[in-house]
Image (cartoon, rainbow, N blue to C red; front, side):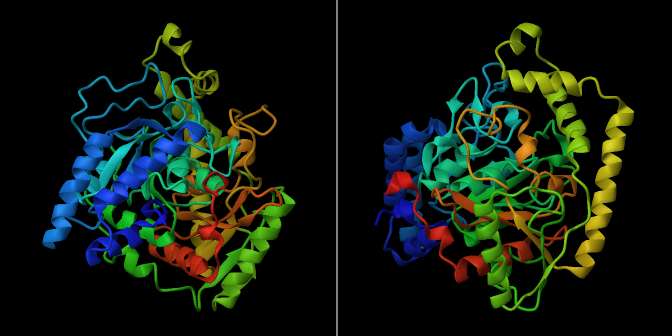
Length: 464
């Protein structure tokens, strides 16, 4: 078996025992990129020479018994939204490339570099990460390892496709409306949107306090491992929470016995594809077998798409504020359209949307006094054709993501974990939502579900 098929946790165990070399793991990841990236278009930049040089340095440290950090030698990719020293940050755009010298790492990139990760390159995003699929004027369409005619989701679609194909065990994504959870769900991988403020972000997202940075991996333990690293302090983020008192990797093995878990197949208002519903119902039963008290309960909030749009489209307007009409002609027309709408909102509109957020946060705070966790499908549908924003080609991406963006409004932690396949062989995923600051509990539930099932071991069609 190729080391590209191993999790980060398995790679690190192999390094420690001397059974695997970081050089081998890096070369295997680069070989996967060489073989499969033309089919999915996950990478915007691959720096093989730098990656192999880093891997050789890591191999020497492991040989000497002096690994520099908890990710030493693990092949990792970075979403092309996050500043990365030595590489351009194009943000999926011909006009939005960072103008300053590429000599600064954003906070999560700095943390993984300090922890010894081998950085392979940067992965795709839609322009300014504005939508739930990954295509951009600059880099084209990122597609799905399970069916390259289908979308990988977004906006962290490059991260999901890369991790799903073993093109690096770990990836850093961002999520302001579902952008790590959506592509994880479509590709059968794992993602965790942490509590807002848990991971430092700089420069701040134009989408404001909707935007989170999160791990994208193939297992819940790997997400916990990566979250332990990127949750470190960085003075550049004024919203950053205190360093967590306990390791997320430690908490991730604590199980769910005795927890009270709410199961909501529709949030009270969502139409769900029959195959998704069947896989979700089967997944919910697993938690009862694991010793949790499982009950049907909806959170009780209505669809918050309109206030979310106010915040989201206003963020898009802020994104495009510096650009001329001529520059906008080179940008994604959908982004330009929502930015122009966002520019029409008033301060009162914005504060009204924030008031809805406050009410939802209070409502979920009360809900979680009764329930330790909430389970929903991550998405109500399987992956659709690549290159489209919606399955029909009409409307906005929020029309098919009603389970994800509410929890950016409330700033709660939420993970996406694979829970089955449709009749057409496309992944279906489960969303696990916890109260704010309960990232460890969410990851423990994700890991417990993985241990009780085999869904996360399913092999994408391209690798068969």
